[in-house]
Image 1 (cartoon, rainbow, N blue to C red):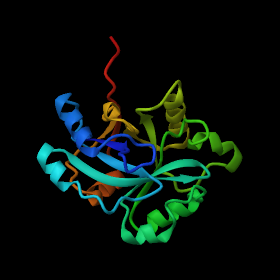
Image 2: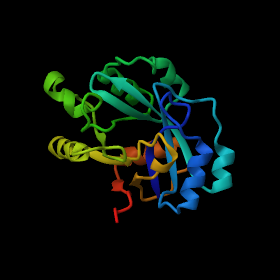
Image 3: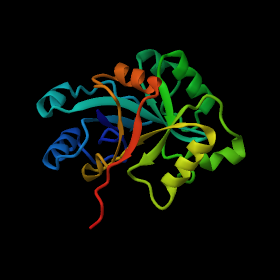
Image 4: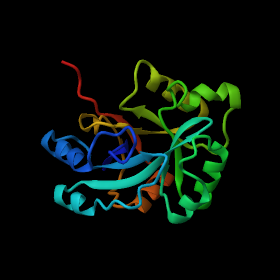
Length: 212
């Protein structure tokens, strides 16, 4: 199963895509993904129900969050009400150590995203703050990366022994499915996604169409 683990809808302040339009684009373009994860910025969208859309299009639609720490942005999978109450997802100065600790305590998984990006990526802050304890997974392939950002991310992952995931970081419809993560078994809910990430059997994929 291939999931795009990083996407944003109009629920994010800079997102311009409706979830139904993502589904339509995936189907009309026959994209090689089975679903996607909506990781809205600085929040967990617990009010939206995408089950009808998922059934209509035969696409897995899951939810996560993207929070902000001193090491840059971090994807959080497996958000529960208890985790939402543990810290303020809207805080743009969250300590990464605290986010990792609370995720571990509440059965979630935290993964720094686009870590090769300046300012909002983890690699840009290691010299200042040191190598953080507790990171196991980082996003090594990001559909919105420019220049050598993914190369920097992969080099950091190789050096520090991190596992890599892939996500499009889509904010507009046509960017969905540019990157993804392959899992060995079907995933149908957030809990199963967390279990699959903790099993550490996955592969980051660059799914961008080759330029002609």
